[in-house]
Length: 310
Picture 1 (cartoon, one colour):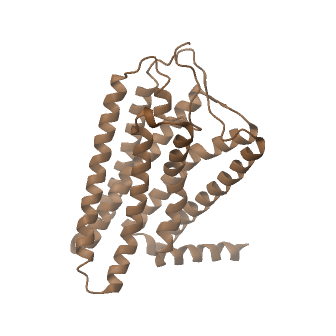
Picture 2 (cartoon, helix red, strand yellow; picture 1 turned 30 degrees about the vertical axis):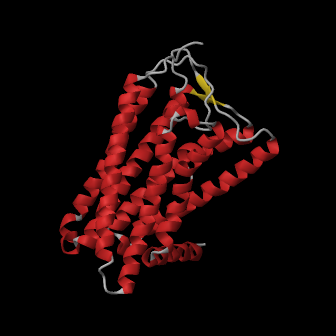
Picture 3 (cartoon, helix red, strand yellow; picture 1 turned 45 degrees about the horizontal axis):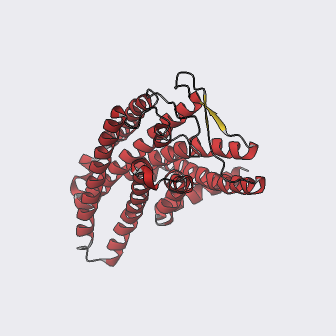
């Protein structure tokens, strides 16, 4: 087979063998995408328009919604168009762009979730220092660092991945372009550069996860000492959803990229990818808004304002 210098497209598998099931998948994922798009867009507009929500927590939530919109828009529209029109091919440049954007949005989101854990830690464990440590300048710098880190990591990892010669065909075992699927097409079983990149990625992911866990251990220790049940409920309602999102995001993403090839199969790969690419962006608006009265009130006012204008 030719190497990557002459490879101009990749082939993606179909979700199903029959056109009827393909159409069912299209409608299902279209509904999920529209729900994610609407929910995240409402959060972005509510936080941007309501001055009461101009606080660090909602600023980070706004950034999270933007990243969620970016990550789900990188994959779902393309795959649904392919499913509807029964298209299997994706260009080499299109695959490269998809890998870069996925790595960018997912990495930036993970760093942002780490920053959000730090924000909750300061708010609950060191409330007297919150205004000083989490002022507007510090928040902007931390959010910018998350975005910049995601961009840098995605650029380096994408360049490293597509610099590896490919000579095992062009058929991917996944409905999107993922780094593990592309590496299976490499000319050699061992890729030293990619192995180093994966080790560095695993160390960064583990470091952030340990930081998040330690932060929440200290948060819960403080919360359990709050004499008021209402105070405990309010603190847990802010922290538990965030911890649930982080756990789902980290567990499924880590499994997708670090699982051994021996347990890999197309059906399992597709389920795992849906869990870390589609589910979090769809659930985040519900998780962060259902238990948050301020955000629900802001969204309700925004919807009422739009209805009045029409």
